[in-house]
Amino acid sequence: MTREAPVVLWFRRDLRLGDHAALLEASRHSRHVLALYVLDDALLKPGGAPRTAFLYGCLEKLNEQLGGRLMLVRGDPAVEVVRAARSVGAAAVHVSTDCGPYGRRRDASVAKALAENNIDWVETGSPYAVTPGRVTKPDGDPYRVFTPFHRAWTAHGWRAPADTGPSLVDWVEPPRSLKVPRPPRVDAELPEPGERAALDAWHAFLEDGAETYDTDRDRPDLSGTTRLSPYLRWGCVHPRTLLADLGDSAGAKSLRSELCWREFHADVLWHRPETARENYDRRFDGMEYDDDREAFDRWCAGRTGYPIVDAGMRQLLAEGWMHNRVRMVVASFLVKDLHQPWWLGARHFMKHLVDGDLASNQLNWQWVAGCGTDAAPYFRIFNPTTQGEKFDPDGDYVRRYVPELRSVAGKAVHTLKDRPEDYPAPMVDHAHERRVALERYGKL
Ligand SMILES: Cc1cc2nc3c(=O)[nH]c(=O)nc-3n(C[C@H](O)[C@H](O)[C@H](O)COP(=O)(O)OP(=O)(O)OC[C@H]3O[C@@H](n4cnc5c(N)ncnc54)[C@H](O)[C@@H]3O)c2cc1C
Image (cartoon, rainbow, N blue to C red):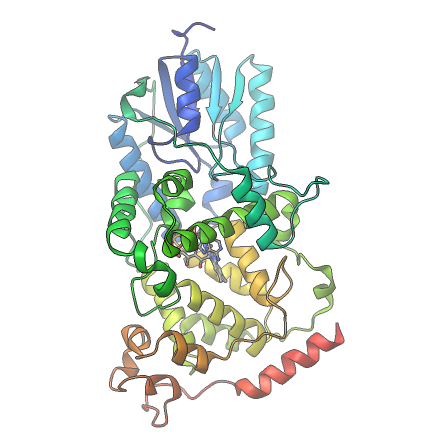
């Protein structure tokens, strides 16, 4: 292959130009690179409106960075990627590895279709610091427990960020391209899309939040976390970029560990792709659930009568995002107080989260439900009132999202001795439902 024959860089979950290992590899093969994105209905249809709107925003930004040279097509990737590569006489298609179940199937069929056309398929890097599947126990088995995975992941280490940017190559003028579609209407207020916004958010966090991350990250009333999850979801920033900036403070260690949770869940899904839909722990297949659509709808709307649960569910609708601590509380409430299956809640989350990610979402739901790998034991049931008192100690978080409770001062907002008339009574008695949950668990 000469350096003059173009290659294609097919963007998927890597919508950035900095620290881009596949771009670096593409540049080693040719100076002339066609930037391609395929709008694939198999992925777009099930994705909720906030995620789709954010994606389209990221594509606009990427196109701007490329001087308007992003080739955007719609259809079956196995057809469209080949067509795009042939249209510029490309010798190879470069990608970052996609580790999800659908992405792996899709890529196998695209690589096959390219091979039939004598076009090479080159995978370099992935959306993770350590590509899923790489960290295994000494006997080659995957880890099932986070702490030893974390240890092995740290020992394995990761490369330094790749030195890439928009001017590394000459971007080929696409022979044709669709315009980025108009984003679907979204009521939630979404973050600014794109690589620049991701890096700005990261640098602001390094200046303001990194020192206190360790102590503030569990407090939904404070802005104690990075809020980078949507950017990591779409690859507007690579985790390696973040890891390279982290030192050895308690905050840095804690954030490294959270980033490792993301990698752990991706690793679990890589080894057990069926856990996107099925219980990791098959003993839970026999769990008895309630079929109560009305209860589920009240949970979705944030009308359960438990203030921290309602605040979380309303934050999800208002921002397409929810604080991690509250995600755990609302998930526990759905599964253990309302006795509904985890996958109903996971589906609702995927519809509304701007950071909705199959591995992180499904496996965190399973972790809370008790049926996942390294799961919180089933009998550890979050008490929504004490969780509220502990992690939202002044009640500010609840008042921000539940206007009916704004007249209640301080932490009394969690116990509500005097409940405002327009705020519902608790839909269930937590102490009773806790016993029911434990009884059902005992029968497994
Ligand atoms: C029921 C449930 C569902 C979830 N669904 C998702 C999801 O769809 N997408 C998603 O990105 N995260 C999900 N999480 C994990 C976590 O809640 C979010 O990553 C986090 O709240 C994002 O906010 P942040 O970027 O400010 O996090 P920070 O605290 O700043 O953490 C930095 C990054 O580390 C990663 N991270 C942190 N905690 C976790 C975790 N427990 N599991 C995996 N990765 C983590 C994220 O990529 C996050 O952006 C879920 C958690 C629960 C309990």
